[in-house]
Image (tube, rainbow, N blue to C red; front, top):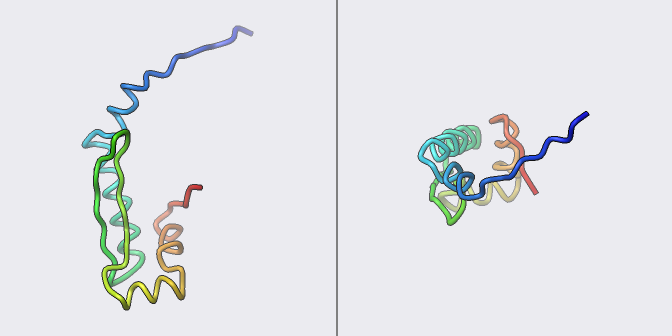
Length: 86
């Protein structure tokens, strides 16, 4: 069996990971998690040097306490069909 080799084009990968299409995927996933978490949570998006980001966070002290006591955002990840990476 022949050995297959490929060379990763990092510039192309970075361009893909920062693209508007990738940001739309991240925004949609972030919105699913925010909705699963309930009221008091918000999202924000940005593009970093190499990849795009979407953050979900408690918007007020009530949601922050809820998240701290119940791991609401962590549970919302699984409800939204996602998992946390290390």
